Length: 597
Image (tube, rainbow, N blue to C red; front, side, top):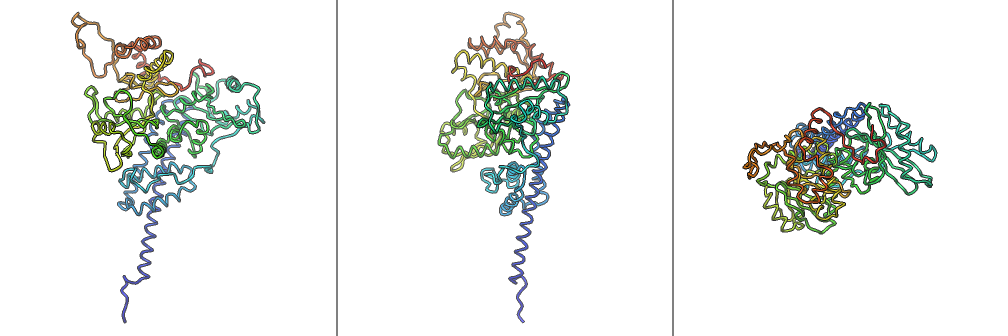
């Protein structure tokens, strides 16, 4: 009798194929679950930093808050590396199988249906995918190019914000409840006095008679925003069609008790508090999308990318920024050009006029007057990312392997990039790929600003410039290259430093007076007659190369003559070494309820 060979039996082959498909589906689901486990571990640790920040604030452990803020920046990359290592260990080379990875993504989407941080989990998936699949970001079709899971109205265990009703409770009672519901364990020094000051500030903003609408309410985010020595109560007052955002900083007095420090209501006062040019906030959020939505209703001029970055989710911010950038490219036609201003010795800088950012590429050959290398420059940017920027150092987004449309690059820009940074540039038919670059918000360089403004605004800018040097010094930073071209002016007139290749810790500098000449030959010599070490700084020389214009000289000496004295800088160093770190508040002194706390 003729027998069909077993391996040709149609039912057996179908069963084997079915088993193979089931095995691959099971493997795809296991990989997706392992990736989500990696993200969930990351977010648990992320939240724990914010939760312990509350305890540190209550006990006044400012150094611990700074360490938590700084250390948290590296959490994401560490968790990504751990997840990649697990996938390679448990699934081997099969994890990099393109066909399998498509199924992994589908299963991952399914796992995110009821997730509380789906937008952040998608970014984590992208980060791991790019490591596993060994593909550059813009070529990988197996990542989340657009968000898949909606973050609208995520069902939370507890609400993202609390509501209070002055129409029923009265304004005073509503504010008392809003502050006490924050449940800080440290007592207030003078809660009644603070409350009177807060009520006066609100009434000053809303002069009587105020028509109260039926929907009158105060909404306050459920978590405080911690940074340095302050905790910020963040909320808004809703009355009819009006939504008035407000922030109340809470601080410690000299005895360690709490007090309400100010009421911030205007955009010009809120913007510096929520600036990415400062340390990122520590905020405990079950659903970050809900917090970002609330913050956007307060500050519609800030993008979602900026807000995610400000609350410490800078990888989500980077992903959103890149999506916004691609969207802008698709809907614009202008060309990338060499950035206006004095060309730098370390960076080649270009911009898209219709987009408010600049793109910075480290040159292959750095100017001979700069004693640095590409790796050292990257270390300086890393230092700034992890340091408290006190609103005086521009935050940067660092990217690798970014594709730009070649047709949108001017000939001048292409020639400059090929001439100055050829190792970082690749050309394909329609794209220019830049292997490494930094992106910063565009500002008006201070030297250009001085040439464009009247005396009053110049005076304000010179004062701001000196204040920037003072505030950087207060957090142990010396800018190094103090030339005006390395500082920019923001839309609110704030002066910000953005060129980091010579930045140093203030305590690593040796501030000296110029020795008196020994002879007449010394006095007229072309070169200094005294030895100079690499870290020697002579503040007297600032006057020579900074104050050449009579107007800038006049205003600088009016406000900042002490910055030309080595003893001023040594005094700041001494206080830092003794642990007397200064806290720079991000709002005007004039708004504080009392200056003597």
